[in-house]
Structures are given as structure tokens and as C-alpha cells.
Image (cartoon, one colour):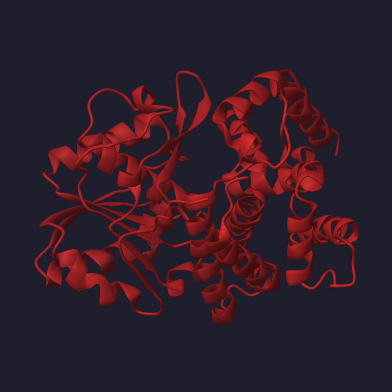
Length: 385
């Protein structure tokens, strides 16, 4: 069966990638809105970017009023800044929040109405040029046609999509990730791992995404514990930056499954960082999904060295779940209780979260039927850990 495969129009990866990208950026416009975060601003990186832009005759203004993960108010505030400053293209610089916000700004600077009007629809339009520069190795947003935001009226975390949200240019330099602290390194790395495993076991997987997924999974299992222990290890940082991009390309074309469907409501209602909520869920969700894609989970186990060719598909698949449990334990992923979530409130909200998870569409990509009852069962297991 034929499949559609999309990627950023251009990607530049490696040390010094931004300098290499300048001739392409010069063609995009005369003034950029740089969407970033306050922590990134304190590192001085936005100022460095602005100086390099100025040297080639491009003006810029920084918008960094991003107090948390994207919501509709934050996004429209950035859209106002884009318009008021007469910008003509957008640069996203940072982790998932700035990159997703940059995509939303590019779209809503052109589209009429409110963000919620486009939920469940393809976002289309003549959007301004978009450059995405990740400073974490995890979200893969620099490679996808999606962004996620929270609608403040409904407390729902919504996945928005459109080919026009793919960046014109993705700039991936692992040096920008070296300053990420251990907590962010682990959270974003687990996000990338979730992307890669879900995309590989999704109903929509194809031969090309399989290649990206398996390489990303192998890199993350090998290098995330190294980077978590020693953030200055450039080999680990470089490998994880590549893995995050690969996993982003994979979900762009294959999609996520049950983990992300269940993770978004936790993030929206309890403000848990996306990578951490994925990491809390991943073992139980994939244990549930295992019997729908045994051969694929078995192949992952063999690829990361936890199973051999002599292991049966059942045994190898189980070994992957065991490996995943050991991996999350080594990285000290917290339980809901350890994170400090109000468990009584969590139980009270489980029904809404299950409905929101199913409504997102992601669980339907799992190679096994997923019902609200299944999701409630997994939330219960999570709460009781």
C-alpha cells in the first residue's frame, strides 16, 4: 500500500548548523519573531542568534513570555507581538513549548478565528516562513506537522495538525542541548523514546519510519543514561539530538498511539511535563499493547540487545517490557505519588481523562482495540503505584 512521507523542507544537522543555515534564513524575510523561553533567554543564546541575524541584515524581536506548556492565551499573545512588531517570519528556539508555540504563531498570524476552531481539521494557509531550532533532544517538534496546546476553557490538551506547520528549515546543533539540566534531559529523552516506540508499533508504521524508529530507540537506550549522568558528554548529546529528530520524523509519518493519548490529559489537568507523563505511562501502556504487536516489540528487544534471534516472539517482546522497566527505574522516573499529584483528584478525573484520550484519536493507532475501560484500568494501575 502506498504511503505519504513528509519532512521539513530543509534540515541542517551538526556543529555550527546555525551558521550554515544563515544563507537560507536570509531569503525568508526582513524581521523575525524569535519565540523562546525565559531560561533560554538567560543563557544568552537568543542574543547570539539576534547578532548573527543582524550581521546579514535581518531584524528580530524576542518573545519569551512562555510561563508553561502552550495554551491559547499564550499563543495569541505571541501572535499579537508578531503583528505589532511587523514581523514577516518566525523562529522557534528552545524545547517543545517554544517550537510548538512558533508553529501556532505562524498559523494564527494568517488564519481567522480562534485556535479551537481548527481542532480536528487540517490547518491550511499561506503561513509565513518558519525556522525551528531545538535546544532539547526530545520533542522532535522541529520535524513534525503537529503542535499541542491546552484550551483554557475546557482544560483539554489538543493536537493540531497541518502540512503547513512543517518548518521551512530545521536547525539541529547538539551543542545547544549541552546546558539542559538532568531533569529536562531525562524528560525530553523519554519523550523521544516514546515517539520512536509508538511510531514503530503504530498501525500506520511503514518501511521508512521503521528505519528511523529502530535507530532512534537504539541511540536512546544507549545514550540517555550517559547524558543524564554527564550532560557535558558530547557524543551522547549528539546521538540524542539525532535520535529526537529521527523520532520526530517517524511520528510525523506514522503517528503516536496509546501512551500519548493518555499522557496529554495528565499534562493538561495536572501540569506534569509531557516527557515525564509519557515516562510514567510508557511501561503499563506498552504492556497492554504488547499482544497486538508481539513481533515488533520483539524486534526492538533484539535491536537494543535484550533478546537474541533464538528468543521466541513472545519471550523477546516480554524482554522489551522488562528492559523498559529497568530503564525507567535507572532514570528515576517518578510515580504519580512521588511526583506529588493529588491521587484523590486524579481518581476523580480519570473518567474525563479517558474520554479525552479516546477523543484524541491516538489510541486508535495502537495495533489492538483500545476502549475507555482499558484506559481507565491503566490509569488505575498508575495511581496505585
